Length: 498
Picture 1 (cartoon, rainbow, N blue to C red):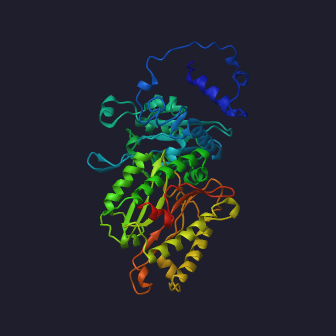
Picture 2 (cartoon, rainbow, N blue to C red):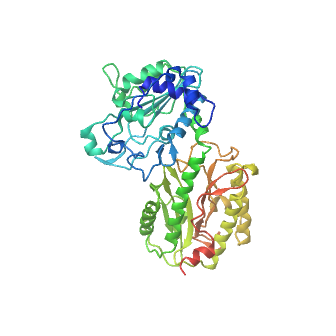
């Protein structure tokens, strides 16, 4: 049956407010919504199959090979997105609202655009993956109820011929479960009433100029979002979103495990082959990430042969790979919006020299020890893990003949051992590394040593850059390594060429 929106919204409220899990019985629903007791549904038939409709992103009906029934994005259901919005609404003050904007299409020149990447907080709450959209979560008084508004581009046959399908306002209701939808081009009239009626406005788009054109009318100058909210009590949304996003759900961890598995397999496949150019290895990983199951690459990779590895974020990837040297590869794929972050360092000719092996195994021992502490029961923070890693590396390097006095460790290990990961490579930026690690936190563990080519260091290690990085999910009593398919033991790496 097809309920009208008011009736459907009333039914959704009854279901959402029920303490029973799974969903309440029909009897309980009828008690909560009395008119259903006498309602006789009339069967109707759609004039067009959902599979024949066109949306701005995959849905189950059009892409069953990508999405299971009930999912909005791979692995994440409509119910989980609704639960996320409910949790945000619960953290708002009475009659407060949260306003989020999508990313805009970015152009490298003329009509040539970059690959679209949705704003992570917007994506986390909506699953909507198109540009030029605004979401508003409106808390209704002091209750737990909220209204989800989604303003987006209208259907436009001419524009869609050039740019591809758009979902449109009706899909906002039927697919993305918005309570209210509207044309983004009318935002200058749709948004002010919501803001004026709000006790507080939580948003991070105050300084964003990309949506200026949607606030234009005869009485407003361009980019007047700031004028609309100038008399409102405005607070940053980011802290609330960090609190929601930092602990990953089972579905999020499953997506990250898939990203790690597919990416790790690509790394191992790459180690099997002989490479002579950084760009060729980069192209292979990009291909193998995607052919192996990832949606896309997670970030611009580092493919650093020889002394190029001494630059932490070397991304030119245009040099030759020389026999006898190490190649450091920092790369990862993305699945369902969630990323894997992996670094491996291996000999270009497939066989470690004695100095390479010694330094590599020293770093690997420290990395394994640090990973073992990625459990809630260890009472760790990322900063504590960093301090433990520094101590381990310092002692290991002393054993290899390094003079570790003065600023030696800062020179040889200039970055932090880890960061949070999730929808972003550096997830929830600004969330403190001093926070206790809890089950559901996902982090990297990436010790590395980068030996400058100067007389301060033992000669046979000069010019070596080695980093070993895995993506790890913190659990109660043990770590879950998400990237185990990327081999890292010396014996396993060397065996790949035999």
